[in-house]
Image 1 (spheres, rainbow, N blue to C red):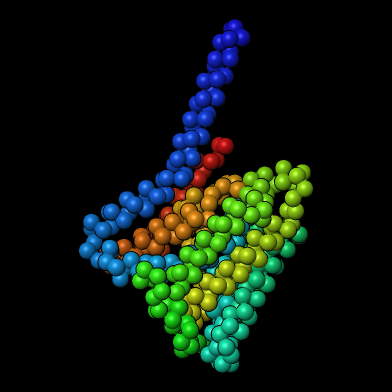
Image 2: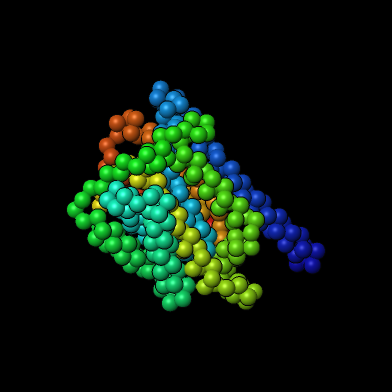
Amino acid sequence: MTVGATSVRARRAADRAALADRARWLAETLGIVAVAGALVLAFGLTSSQFLLAENVRNIFVQISVVGVAAIGETLVMLAGGLDLSVGSVVLLSEVISADLTATHHLAWPVALLAALGAAGGIGLLNGVLVGVVGIEPILATLGTLLVAAGLGQLILGLRYLQVGNPVFNDLAVKNVLFNLPIMVVVMLALYALAAFVVRMTAFGRMVYAVGGNRRAARLSGLSLVGVTVGVYVVAGVLSGVAGFLNVAQTGLVSQNDGMGMEFQAIIAALVGGLSVTAGGVGRVERTLLGALIVGMMTNYQTIKGIDPSFQQAFLGGLLVAAILADRLLRGRQ
């Protein structure tokens, strides 16, 4: 075989690889938008209620809590980790904020700061266990899941806390933008802020670098411990915000609140294009689309009267499908 023939074959192989990369990029970038658009069209054509303004508003309200929690989960996954404590931290934040306002009659800003402090503390513990001690993220956050849930249930006891503070009611009811209430605007603002931080700041670039190749990041002088602790703390604080918003959405706090929310957050991130096989892949704003897609599916099934147990099974199937798709797209890279 001549040198020229070998060179031609190498160029063709490189061209095929480049074409495959472009196709993959288009699938990841435009695929999620196409799926969301197809679902809106299909659900709108088969349900007279789905596209009503009030129902669209309900969908955004329903995804607000999970959507905020999913921001933190996204950052952790971008850095190559995983956080299973999200739902329990949401519960802990709910209990603290509701107990301080409804039982002890403290001002809501004090209750919010206390809830965020506790949630951030669990995030800090996650970061230390994973980044400093070196425990696998699944095991570390499974442990803190039990810690946060136990603390929340200990404070709550056998009570149901009902919150009548008008601030909470305003978050869920008072419209401020395009017929959307304050809590939805808070979620959208947090996504905009997170997208800016991830794409435009040094911390965001470090998150991608650590998640993409930890060894190269270490050799480049980046602080793996600092980035790991940072993303887990941010995830904890955002779960605290989600808990505060959940109090506003329901007006009632019980021991079952937040149960399974970590899986809903992971599903939203995976549907939005994040990877479980590699860190440093995906965008924060796509997680919002993922949460919206899951929210639309759940809302449509509710409109159609589908049993909640089947809806839960469907979410489990969606999680498996997202993991399989991730394996097919990126498993061999």
